[in-house]
Length: 351
Image (cartoon, rainbow, N blue to C red; front, side):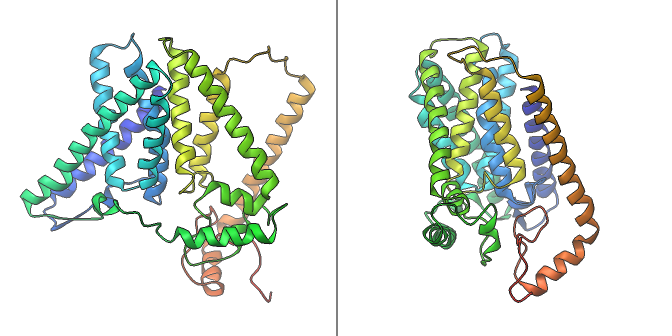
């Protein structure tokens, strides 16, 4: 938990330092996108905030936390909300709204969590208004990429991606086209449909999608029942479970309009949150001790998989510039979001 607070503190410090430098530069225009450093796309920044915003509230829920620490963490959470608002990632706003709505229905602890989030969000909105609306107006500075302009119902061309995914589902409903094959069907918008269910269905098939969705719903409902049962508990483990559950709800909601299950950094945080929840879960039966041979077999498989990834990176990295140029000549358009930068996994037609 301390690591999460440290990361958020460092990113908040970087954002504030960039904002101060922008105001002191006397430039006529302030581009808020330039303040969001560290991610190749500010939407990935928003996904990271969706995972971490629910976790920052944990120390505020603990009775053992000193008052001075609570004040500092509330300020940090409010600033983290200000950054989330200034980034203009509507998926983050939607995910956090869903998390607040769901946790509010989980008893006293959930209502306390929702109250802290609403308080921090309100403070963050006030800070955002002062920093990017009132102050620029007083200094005659024009703000570009203003988050207020994102308050629309536009799908931002997602309907094109969703239509493509739907056509792929209808063409191969049972087994799908295979993993990452949505990216193989090039379009001018993006390499993934920005919708987790549609992506899984078009690449893995409808039966697989139903199985995954069923497992997810079972896990969420089981955790929700446990949270309701422990709604009056002030134990750190129960409050930690609540924050992790809210983080997962927010991320899954955002995955309905964004690439949470696609981007590697978001995948890492998704695995951490789910694994953390599993570690805290109260199982009905005592888990059997791990089989030594099976554990070693898994370790060998993971080692081989890691080695394969490392080999691929070492093989492809020296020719990365040539691959970019080749992709530009053969396919045209901008590079699509994959770690090898072109997002196409098959040879172009005619080769």
